[in-house]
Length: 98
Length: 338
Image (cartoon, rainbow over the protein chains, first blue to last red):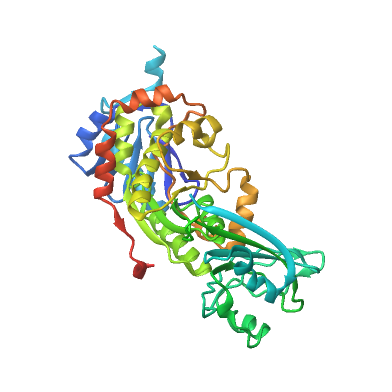
């Protein structure tokens, strides 16, 4: 699901970028994720959860993983992907194209 | 609002020290910038507390490299007192009728042209500003420049967590500590939670205007601190056009949320100039430590917002309740923790 994991601009966190464009239904994502991790807040435009580290989940699927450990960031991105992949919360970009 | 008086004269150091009384005739913070014959213009970055009866320890600051080389100034650390006092053996420093903020002293050449800036209220007290300190590069520079001008600072950090991380708060506090140590100026520091305000704007308002709502809310909260502290206005590190919220149109819209003066000493400086000052005063290294940028910033922020759009969206939110809630969560950062 995530093809790129890179340090963010100030190296304070890692950013995971999806391999293909899609849109997340954050309200439904929250429903799924609250069963497996702690919801910090749902601001409508992004969802913040806490699992092994704090993660900001954007509508376009981008993750901001608040850790300076690349290993932990990769693991956490994998966990989020595992929980969300294959669920109806993901609307792939090609769906918008008709 | 305070009066800023500036007097330029040429004379010896002794006459410069006497001059605040001579030229202003009243107590008040005085900034003295020296220009020597040999080294060109030099501006100190430090504050020299000179009271009626004592010259306390003071850090004397940056020197400017000129054609003749680096001027023989001590680095910006405390401990220059003896050198300065030795410069004027037996001089009755109690003659200085006020507060000398900065002074340039060339240990080899006492014939100095001084600029004296007296930053005082008409009543004689110091100008006080509430400075928005973010943890970035600009706000500490703006704060430093105003301290140098004799302004008393109360710092305000808007805590953007969970949309940033703990490192930003730590950086802001480190910057306040650094400025305090550098200038010798005590800086009372408030921290106000701003995350819930972001959530309210993100849920209710147009996405591309988010940064404007954010800044307008900062000003509203800062204004409350201005009132609480008996201050005169708000100080920010904005520089024209640097980011979307700092275009002229957006600044105009943001200003409308405040009823006190907003002082922007960096408005005409570009980033390179600001970084240059930040490096000289030692804040750059702190400001550029890792710290998560605000994650709720829209991808395409507005650069030319219309006041009508902003006001319309703000109708959807109970702004007063948000300000009140923010102030309930406010705390003063303990100097002991610094």
